Length: 130
Image 1 (cartoon, rainbow, N blue to C red):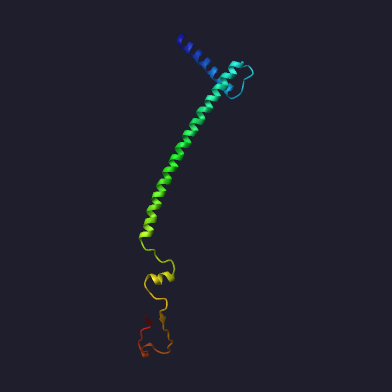
Image 2 (image 1 turned 90 degrees about the vertical axis):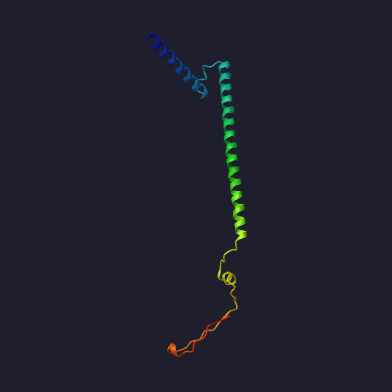
């Protein structure tokens, strides 16, 4: 039982010390600090900034490497797509291209004639001439 009381008192003292350290590091309760304590707090803050900057730099380097890998993959995909586009003939995009694509002359004449009457009396004619 005595051991637990001692342990609880020790933990309470440790918690109080940590809370005071947190207040000092956040800029509170500095009035009661000596010059040496202020130097120690400043050193702790500088070390924390160094660690934060190192961590941030490492994170940025990793992000840059990931982006470079994505760029490499996209470049390879672009090369593959470019090769596919140059190897296969392109499909026509409009009627003029479609006509030339199927080897149909644009100068093709179509004869149209209006006949009045029943269709069986008309002579059969080939309407398309090439």
